[in-house]
Length: 45
Image 1 (tube, rainbow, N blue to C red):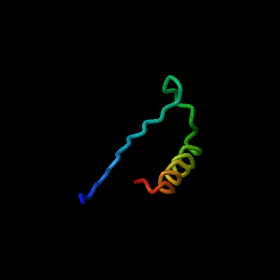
Image 2 (cartoon, rainbow, N blue to C red):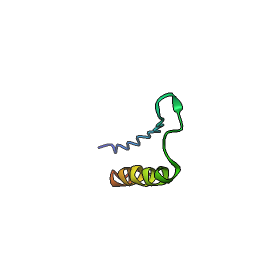
Image 3 (cartoon, rainbow, N blue to C red):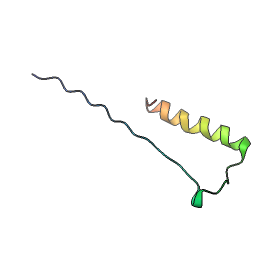
Image 4 (cartoon, rainbow, N blue to C red):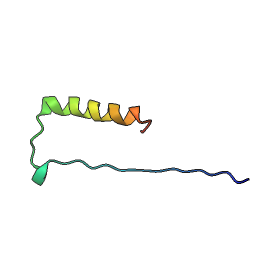
């Protein structure tokens, strides 16, 4: 019986509409922590 290895790689790019600078600097760090927490929760890196 053969072994199977699967490695799925995703690269997510998020942006605001028309790439406007709408995310406030103080909120930006909190947003990054929130998004990275979701990714880590899904066992992503």
